[in-house]
Length: 202
Image 1 (cartoon, rainbow, N blue to C red):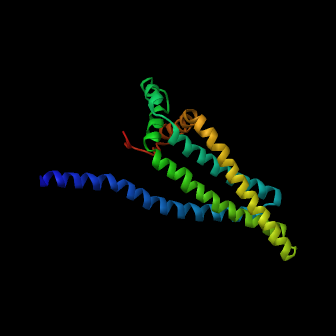
Image 2 (cartoon, rainbow, N blue to C red):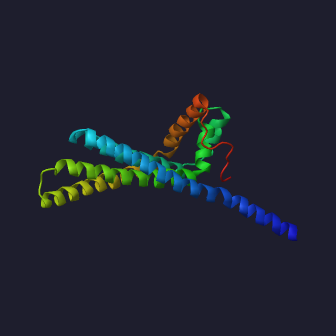
Image 3 (tube, helix red, strand yellow):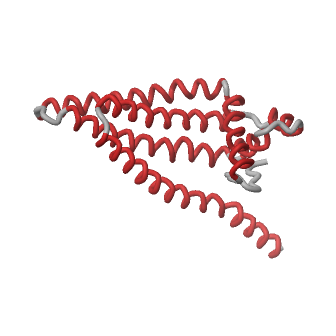
């Protein structure tokens, strides 16, 4: 009886371990990436004109939307069609199965980590744009421009993600397949494997 209890206790510890490890990695990853991209964003914003600044801001928001689409697609997709593709040795099919079986981790990274970083960096980029516009303006103009830029960023982000979710749900198989093929190329050409030997849920 005691052996069975010990075995169940060990299994619980083993099952909880990777999740706890992932949480620690997410915290460190988010901190590191936020600092890195914020630094790059601020450095670039100081050296380019206003029009280029808007393009950079749009690019940052677009990255957040794209990763949000990937996160939603992975959680919406079924792994069944990819098993048949894997049996036919279609490139990327095995990676697609791994993505779907690790949907919680993938979704957390795409929607939360990248999404939050995109929000933080876009806010920083927006502040830089405001400074460029109101360098010689009054306080009232500064408040007005800041409000408009913040509203623009929010509208782009929320509207883009709402539109993207609809695309992700309707085209989850195709999106997961394309992302999986990129992962396949990374493994084949550079030896980079994001989920080595990891099976996830069954």
